[in-house]
Amino acid sequence: MNITLQRMSQEIFEDYYEQSIEEYADEHVQAGNWTEEEALPNAKEQFKQLLPDGLSTLQHVFFSIQNEKQESIGVLWIKIEDKKDERRAFIYDIKLHEDQRDKGYGRATMNALEEYAGQTGIKQIGLHVFAHNKRALALYEKIGYEVTDLVMKKRL
Image 1 (cartoon, helix red, strand yellow):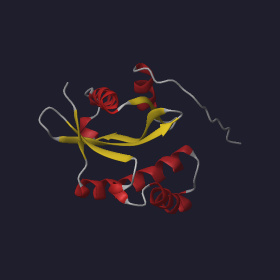
Image 2 (cartoon, one colour; image 1 turned 90 degrees about the vertical axis):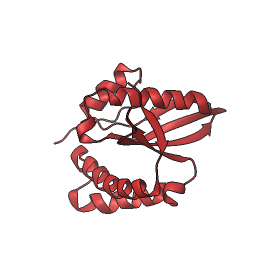
Image 3 (cartoon, helix red, strand yellow; image 1 turned 45 degrees about the vertical axis):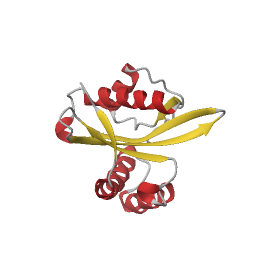
């Protein structure tokens, strides 16, 4: 399976940005972190702080994930930082279009990211995944990601 990561265009970024704010707000509601009333304003504020210059924000890299036919099948957003004398990437978002899931593209995208990391001197890739996202958790564990932190709660 041949996946390529192409730098995201401004047009795709604008659509992605608006949709992602809503999805991020929904994820926090689903996780029990925010109420429905506060979710959208909180998500907008966090995105504004993370990406003050949008697609041109320093250290943030946005890719369009493309299949063998060079069709866009999803997006990948990473931040690259140099920490402790080591270049690291953190995945802020990886998202395949709904009709492209369960075809092996998630694993292929992660492999393409590792290839990119090797070419750019990145030595470590981190990510956050909501606990209710069982599909993503299973994939990350299968390809060698380890839990580094764990936050737990109990509803009373």
